[in-house]
Image (cartoon, rainbow, N blue to C red; front, side, top):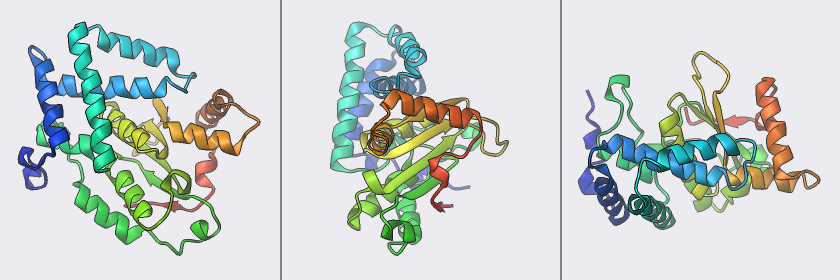
Length: 263
């Protein structure tokens, strides 16, 4: 059996991650690290989504407040600190900051065999699969990425980094459709990819059973890029249109180009 500690240990955390761990420990007390960690990611996800996604505003505002009320005003300030640290960390090094923390803190669901792909492995996969001669890129069309088990978002983050290093603006040249059965880890991926400006949809669903998604999250750059493409429609109309497509199980614009999968 492979020990995840071989890939990422607390000693390997950068200064931002260490500060984040300290802030989370300050919030623990009678709470578990698992609960604090995902309270942070879910509140952050709701905060980002509610800026522009009015379709899901009420339910996510309710979720945000239900988490917020568990903490004192002083404790709530710690969440602002955590968010600021995450933003700074991603600005300095756009890796899977939250996924690395999750594994280093040993709060992964071991019973479910939950294990996040290390960033260096995901980067190697992206380097091997990304093709600069892709006809879509030549024609000015975006590459489409699909990962049904996105976890913390490491495979998508790695691909975005490779594209940037090769001179491509991934915020315009990459579209992603991602899923995960675990809504908690999906919030990690959503937050990180939103902050990195990746155009993506995140669905909570079981890819093996092919059941309809029970929750859908759009990144800000997904909404922004669709708004640019359809200037006659406002963002709310675009999101409603996408929801109708998903509900009717109709192929969206994601399926038009050939998909790039890292698996």
